[in-house]
Amino acid sequence: MSYSTPVGSSFYISQTFASAKTLTIVSNANPALATSTTHGYSDDDEVVFFSGWDLANNSVFRVDQQSADTFQLTGLNSTNTNSFAAGSGIGTTQKISSWIEIPQILSLNPSGGGARYVDVRPIKSLQGLKLPDGFDAATIGFDIGFDPSLTNWDTLLDISRSGTLVAYKSVKASGAATYGYGYFSMSEAPTQAAGAADKVQATFAAQGRLISYAP
Image 1 (cartoon, one colour):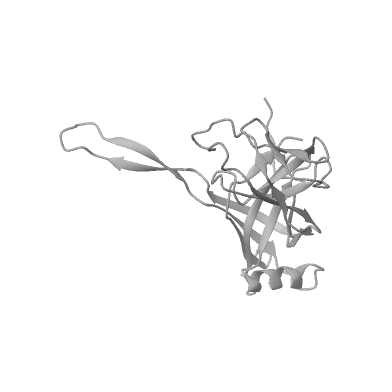
Image 2 (cartoon, rainbow, N blue to C red):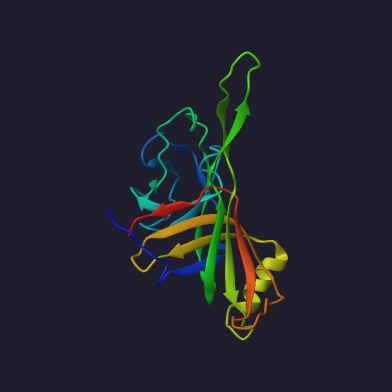
């Protein structure tokens, strides 16, 4: 058992994706094995997975290259065919590159991502029920120290204004990492108060699951 703090963590987004690779087979396995002829991936490449499996679609996984035509999507356990219907996981992957660091993050405010439930109250029953109803979308809010002179500042604003879908990555000092795929937005108006650093608010809104890897 171990604990950690956010000290030393870095945060990135990327809007640079290679051409899509078509996946002709994605197996029900742990981890899932994808078939794509001459995919060209190497171990630990980071890819966005677009799939017929709702619980894996629009998510970022690391690659474990198995052969010239196959690779594992590490972190994807697709053995449960109720959640990952056999034969329905095919789709595409796109390799991510050119990560841009989000600078001067002062605080993080994650929300969502948890399970949803529907309350059921049968008239005859004294005991109510809760039925699973999927998961809420995950968002991560950031307070960023205001400084338009920073190298990536204008690029981050351009991404925010354009509504471009991006990959997201956070890396702890230990090497543990979390990935996502979604929208990044950043305010241009700083919040200012006596006794506090000027800051702007930014948000990453995931369109799929957040996938985490141990160091």
